[in-house]
Length: 462
Figure (cartoon, rainbow, N blue to C red):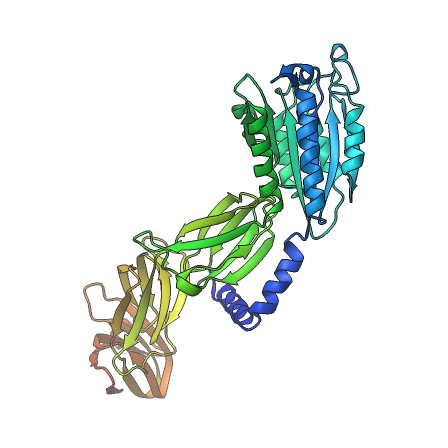
């Protein structure tokens, strides 16, 4: 993450702290649903005529669904229902795989309309589940501040060759509706593998189980979906906080939410309101960033997202606390050349726990490899204060400075030295290779040995 991006996030942090209450209200109004629309997709294929616990499956479904719609409409005016039916327009001998129709569009107080429509439906056709889900996308008009849900009731599996997984993915990618709730009524086959990619599947084998499951589904569709993010330390405990977190839509990459992670009373983390439609990517903007991608929320539940983000601090210091304050240290992951951050000397910075390579931009540069940072502790590295090399030349000369070590490490080059020059160097032994500016002869060069001590000046005259 570059310095510009970090500055940008820092600005966001400040604004979020100052305007946290108004920002939360704005977020809730913009992203969290104030009204809920529930589309009922009901199987009216021929098999729904079969007897189940003394009644036709279809009659049992009608009764249970209507009681639910009546109850919800009476207690919650912010809920609208619509009804789509499949398998009811053509006899099964016709094998009509497009036999699906939105019979009652969304509207307030639809209970009586749905009841009247169901009274005249006769199950007879095939089971085009994938086609019905695909058509359902157009049953929801684009209305802001509305949460959409689908409840699909069927007694059998897809028999029209539709690709349920592909249809469900297309539906979710549009962020139109919650992942569908599927209620399997007395299905003899193992339907879980087929419906697993579609949505939340519930198998019911009795009327009582049917009612219980439907109540559970309605509760999840209507209730608030909340999220807390636990940032785990090295002991897998939720003790990390005060980090910026960004939440993105997994499909589009659009930024949905940006906030500072904090602890409330009893060290409980923030609770967020999130639309459970679609999937999310969570990015903890520490150094380096930590991601948890493609997360699906459970509608109507309190979701806890655990992200491992152990932290430690790096403190770069000098003895006097002033030297090198404008000098930076490049921080990289061990064995990697990508610069994660440029930290100023005489400063402290938090990093994700790990092993890092450091390169201090002193003269000469100082390389430190394999520095372990973590455990929510402070790793202090003390850098020696520089000394000053002052040179006085009477004629134009060129000078190259090397560190007096086995490799004769190049440090700096001075062009056209004439008069006084100053250079701040780290303590140590050096060699200065001096040559007249216009000379082309090697024998005109000479080497001067000198040393530098912290906070001291060494004067060379030539």
